Image 1 (cartoon, rainbow, N blue to C red):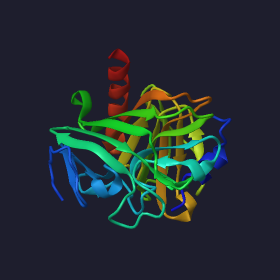
Image 2 (cartoon, rainbow, N blue to C red):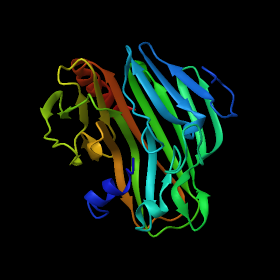
Image 3 (cartoon, one colour):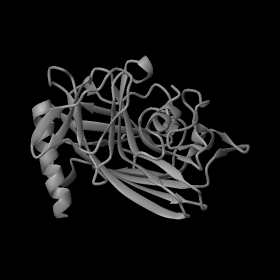
Length: 283
């Protein structure tokens, strides 16, 4: 799926196999897993240590058909779109089971996963296939004692000065069954109109759910910038963005942000989203 240009283009830069492994090395097919009380999250070396699976009570939330999906970070530089597009999980041309992202370190310890990588360019840039920038993350399951709440902390170190960076702080490609979308405010949900195959921005936390409310995912970021998308490119897959932002100019250095996501029933995630927001504000 060609997935970066249509997001940035439609909004425009001006708007806005080893389970439980604790080793910091990786090999083809290495899987790191963290488990909460009800949820299992997996990260794969063939996806640049990106998160490719989140299962709650047998339901898989994450779509990982290609290296542009997953739950991951990506950004576009100097207004060049996909032509200058570091992507955590890998490159457009990477076949199944392979990635051009270089994993510097990755480790799962208890309920926490950490990784650091040089991300692949979605398409080669000036003959280079891997960015000199560094993406690091810490993913914590059942954060702050809130069951099924995931905290995803990201740090991107830009290796050079850039004119501009249009950043998907964190994007999640999710099951196409999550077709009901809501915004959250003060404990209440409001339906958000999301026409098929159209990115819809929001400044409020979003929730994507099955129509019957049996499975849902809530997303929150202190940056308060979100995008929800149902039936992306008519491919039967959903998508969300959090911490979507533009840095212009973008001098070299480290940029950080956090995103929280919660899975469960619609009623559960609504309640726990409020708890997560309160806990983060109080921290």
